[in-house]
Image 1: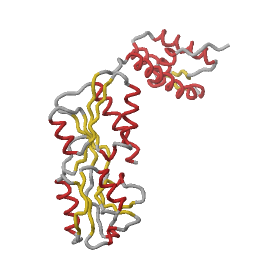
Image 2: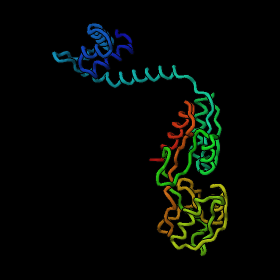
Image 3: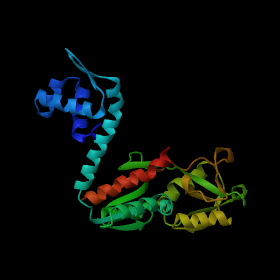
Image 4: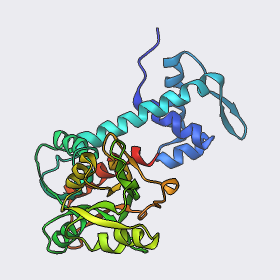
Length: 287
């Protein structure tokens, strides 16, 4: 009859397996060599198989020892993880996060919902707005974290995703074939002037401003309804619309980086945990 496996015996088994020497293992764990040898014998009695071949220069794993090794690592790892989880204090406090409208109904809601379920004692407040608005709120200490677009040569913050801005047209209305081209743009945005409009001018594409909005949702409505082509993130192209590429005479507008910016004045464990959740939310999009 075999005895149940003891996690302490498995820990000692791993130490000896890694060092290949009982004397060195005993020194590493602060025990006597005889005590370590006794634990190894107890483990071998439990599994009913010899786990080590003893030699003059140390020990090596037997076939049974090699078979036990991955299981021992998993069991000990799970025990360590369980102990850490039980000792971890529940998160509380407040997390103020800003997110772009582009991801307000796709990537981030799932992440925020998962965070709220895991940490019910944390109060989460969300500002859904454009980059300039979020950066101002971050500087005024009104946000702890902000997911923003960054077009600068030297990005400040943690890059989550590369999401180029491209010209988008309705697959039904074929607005890009008109002369001049009707264009939908952000109404209050230096970016539109410096990037979107300039990209048309640099390629000698005649255009007229047919629609303006302060939100990407408004631009998507304009494209879908056939009011104009619009600069949108590649990941945010509406159904029945398509990107205008080089073959259409429209190069990408920019190589927008989606960046996580942090409050420079303070942080807390809840904020750090939220930052990890945001990184994980964008990870599938980078593949």
